[in-house]
Amino acid sequence: MSEPSSSPFDAEALEAARVFFAHPVTFMMGAVAMEGLPPADLPEVAFAGRSNVGKSSLINAVTGRNHLARASTAPGRTREINFFVADETLRLVDLPGYGFAKVSRGEKNKFQNLGRAYLRGRPNLKRAYLLIDSRHGLKDVDLEAMEAFDLAAVSYQIVLTKADKLKPRDVAQTAAETLRKIAKRPAAFPRVLATSAEKGDGIPELRAEIVAACAT
Image (tube, rainbow, N blue to C red; front, side):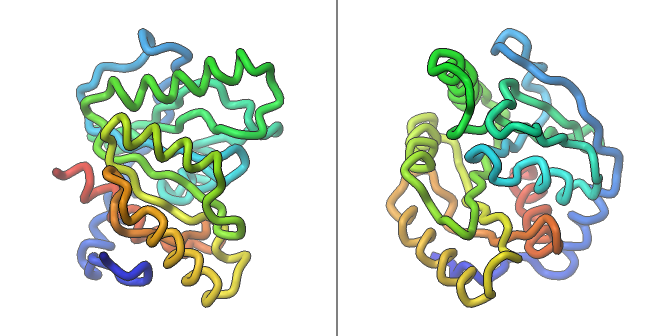
């Protein structure tokens, strides 16, 4: 397995990914049911994670836009699947957050099941990115999400967020521990990314991962 600090991308690949995301990226639509999804005619990558893990901030950082994805003022309130289209050639998909949602159990299951149904029924989904707060590492609720990915046979990659809140040595340790924990999971991609949407750390590598995943 790759070391968490290593990068398979050279300067040319990183620059190509930067240029790609400098092209237009726009909000396409939100869907509250599987029947409302757009046609599966473009490659897609999806972002998943616990409520308040920083999904909106990361999507904005990847695309270089400040207000493309909007975070709810109340964690766990996003109840739809949001689609963004990049350069008319691929889609970024923001899945409903899990955990901490201040809604009824039935309502919470409804939108979390929507996310699971998307994973099972989307043949054009190239990879999912599971966001984990680098300060806290993997939690039990994250293990449930990984089970869903494994059952759906969807390739997923762990992305540590808010890495600027820790010392570099602590970030590296969390990345290494996470890599060990996912080593035997069938659908887990064997590389962990540490990112900071605020500082821009790891964003060029994440862009390159997305472009590479969608090229296969």
